[in-house]
Length: 301
Ligand SMILES: NC(=O)c1ccc[n+]([C@@H]2O[C@H](COP(=O)([O-])OP(=O)(O)OC[C@H]3O[C@@H](n4cnc5c(N)ncnc54)[C@H](OP(=O)(O)O)[C@@H]3O)[C@@H](O)[C@H]2O)c1
Image (cartoon, rainbow, N blue to C red; front, side):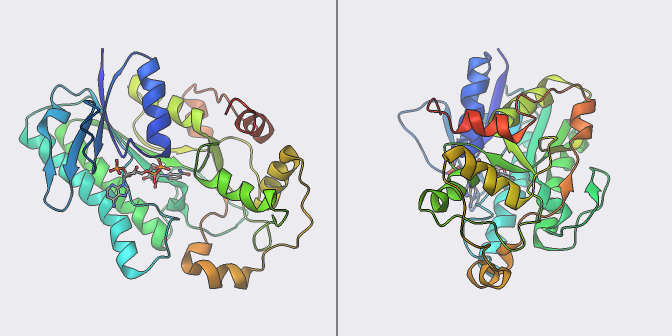
């Protein structure tokens, strides 16, 4: 049974991934900032003091690095920006030095990244993995985040950077946040509504991570987004339609978004290509938004 260590495994993606990988017969360990005395598969680490419970890494086959302070959780003050970067980069560096120190050689190091790599501009361009990062905050975060995981090449460890789009789940993240105003009949598109929202169903995220574990040809950056492009307006309308609550409010004006969210009002923007992962023979379970929403908004979820 292969052993997998997931950092940030208590989060939205991590929880779904852990239960998926356990169901596929992997031994799953979680590395967390919170001790859980009732769960022997949770191991403790502390970024401040540079501590990792060595037991977490003993005999490990794959590391999946998902930990990071929420990008869209709080306003981007200078302090918060620093936390966003350090929680991803310092943590990867700590894992690197511990792996090096313990003379262990996991087969893969898979790190989360985000389509924020390409910036929040809406253009006609469809971005691919060979494009350069944007010179804004998100672009810089993703660049440093990815560099810290590429460092594992120095130890001869295959590394993969997964640039997630907006992960759709019924259990948290963007979808419930978009559903709330619709439920209250005050849902509407944001700004012009024409900005693209690269999206992906959470089950495809788990299956793509498993593909990255199993397929030795997978290496370097991959966009993890569904092949169907949707604008913010189309996405909000599709959710409202599925909820049986049509939209009648005008779009939220851009200046108001900026006032409420500051720099954070610019989270997504252009179309992002899924060609590279499709070319690696991955078949999306949810390639179309309509199918993804039918699943996520069904009573089973
Ligand atoms: N969800 C999305 O739509 C999306 C899109 C693009 C990229 N991503 C990226 O994918 C990763 C996983 O996403 P997610 O939605 O599962 O995130 P999440 O629900 O916010 O979970 C992230 C986990 O990281 C750990 N964490 C939080 N703050 C931290 C800090 N200051 N220092 C160290 N660890 C910290 C926490 O685990 P413990 O409390 O157990 O330590 C937390 O459960 C994140 O890095 C995120 O930026 C997500």
